[in-house]
Image 1 (cartoon, rainbow, N blue to C red):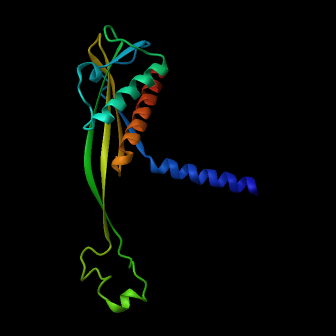
Image 2 (tube, rainbow, N blue to C red; image 1 turned 60 degrees about the vertical axis):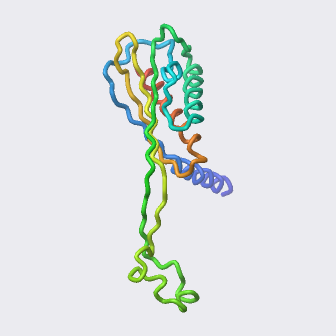
Image 3 (tube, one colour; image 1 turned 90 degrees about the horizontal axis):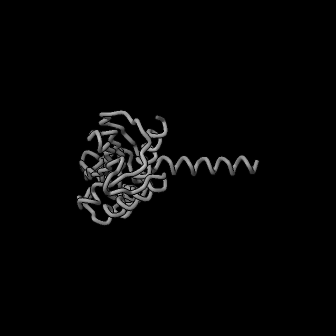
Length: 189
């Protein structure tokens, strides 16, 4: 019985962790198929000084993270004659979400006795609505074959950020998922 409870608790914690960090990956712009093993790469943003994010700190973190992940996979950073050119950019879009809940936040005793119209949607048009701010962040990474000068693929990672404190962490997790998807696509061929 103890093992079952422990397993159930681990399952619930895992479900909560996975549901809180939703990152969707989309593959686009496949102009040519992946045809050879790639051994070297260059990050064009780093070479020409082109920022991909509005925050310089996050931009530097993404450059470092991309380079380390690809080197860990076995590719070598090569400025002169790379087999693969990588370019990244972002789309950071602030948004608002409004949710409506018409259940009364007050019990039928206490505060409501003194002001019966306080919890009424007829007297207070904002009653039961809650607006939250968040940022929809898209991390877009282009993988380009320099000899053909065509896209191998564009991978776009989309996530929601509800706090500026967690933005850099979410962006790096999105980059990890993009690299995982790229490695999966390359190893498939």
